[in-house]
Image 1 (cartoon, one colour):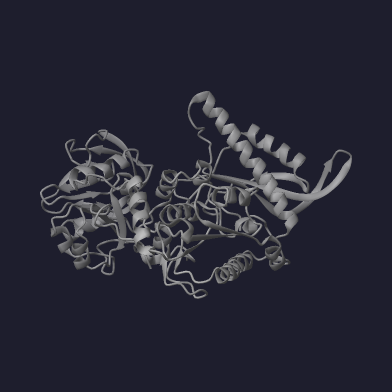
Image 2: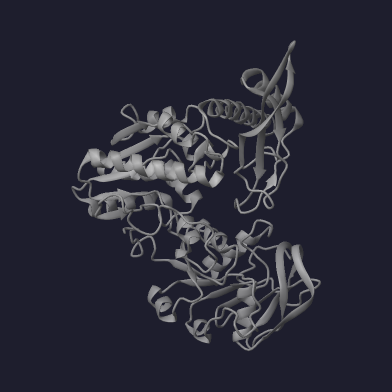
Length: 534
């Protein structure tokens, strides 16, 4: 498997995140990347010799759900703090650092959870440079550092927490009890930047223009005169992978785009317009119009997992058929990105969130020499930046997340061509009206509205009810509108879309989409709900 190793150039400044089971491990790494410094996540079980070999410029210890003083809790040897490499401990990481180095950690009388005022005691701390004397931070802990380790001094406190931060500047060790990586910590990004730049002395040369240039050169070197096959979904990841490969090897790349009939309205044609014969990229483009094939397979199926399985397996069958038509192809390319790797349990320590079909090795249905994954090192926001560098249209680069099974999981119950038409049309109207309202607000005020959702779509319920249109009685479907605000898509709140916008959407859907006589707005947060419908 080829993930490409750029450590000699772009990765020469490496910061590693040691994961102790924290829910924000990816967020920590992303914040470091935002400082233009390359960062990877590893489990706390990673051997000290491997860490020495990687020669990182800095190490960050994540939070975690355990108490560091309990016998079976995740820990690390004292040697880690004696390497001369700057270490930043966050929450559990801060407590563990204190515990291992001779301080004391105990259960707190008062649990701190949520936004908390932190008072900075050491104004000239390298980590708190430019940070307000009183700053709002996100706390989440039962335990606290009751006694700092020898050589440390307290640098910040709260009303209930005597050690909100501490440091040993001589050893370049920094402990922070709160979570600077989350946006609720108002000046958290500044703190992480201070650690990376002021303490680790990183220059910050991890940039997308250099990434794109280097990756193109490495693909050329690796592929030589070989041929590459890529499954192009039209999503951001596969589109950027196609753009990179096209720039590197041109017609040696064949992209297979399977239109399963479960895409958003006009989306298949939009993908073809960019990557097809009339598009801007030099590659071989194959579009397989398999709508009827999918609808036949899905007929009578109502269980969400069964639908997912059918849609996934049918894609593999079609892709296999097309691969055989092409003949010998040496490389299979995939749009795997870094969160796919982490969530599949191949990076960090957190529990496997979900399995990813494109992580973990060669598929068993086709005979390829190797897999090429040019985006394997990137987070989603970095993938978007790479897409813009490649000249992929902004509309595609910033396309909303769209599930692999497509509208199959935004239609409750059986999937039919008629239901797909209904949800495509309703969804198109909804997204159009949201976008128009947001653009009008921005034109008037110069900024995006506070209610602007991070994801918004229409879904089709399996509920039918009586309605009246004109002088006629109807018995039609109800459409549900979903709009959420989220930072990381792990949690989400319903967006407060203005009533006049929702009312306009309702009127248009009922008047323009045949088969619908009711429109609902979904107020459910995540948890307990999911962002998607099935």
